[in-house]
Picture 1 (cartoon, rainbow, N blue to C red):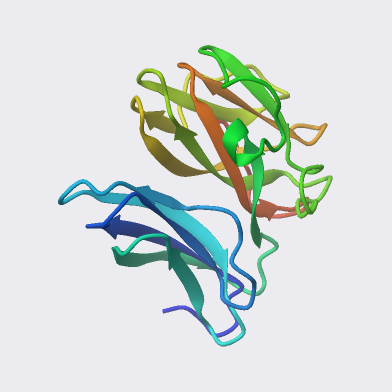
Picture 2 (picture 1 turned 45 degrees about the vertical axis):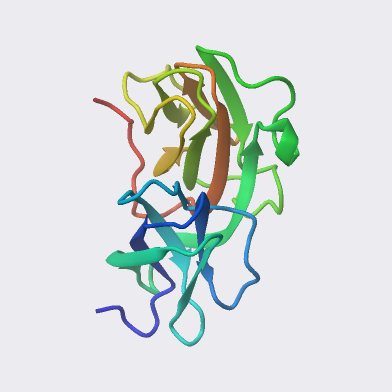
Length: 220
């Protein structure tokens, strides 16, 4: 199904029957395990937590999955990036961390308030894996410790906030979702949260200038 020369793969990862609160990290086995997460799971009996992930493929055709706690894992292949594609998977890296207890990244201050917007420069944070002229970025967005039910909208800061959501969350949850966000001319993406919640953003890939992929919207 996946050709030998594919550069990355899109997989749907599910964690179920975790023995304690846990997370799953998906990464290229040729790289060291990054400080990023793709799925967050609770120890609720019979629960199943899932998310879409994109990751580079190692030289021997493998990907690695790390789980913090004992848990069953299910992986479904959704697609791949052929060697001729300009879309590139990056080493997963945390670009935004608003929780003070975990060491804030790309942000400083109290937990984002209800109705607030964070401007995140995806080309200047961390290892600068995203090109300055990239058109879009693959990011995993997680809402943690929400005060109330709400949603997160992710979009290019060049435009007005759209009436759409990239992630929906509940109080006290840790819920992630993968989204592809167009990048503004100054290298930023914007994240709006309806309720007060901590936000975590991990970069997983980029769409460079000249790619045949065209980021649009989001639009409902």
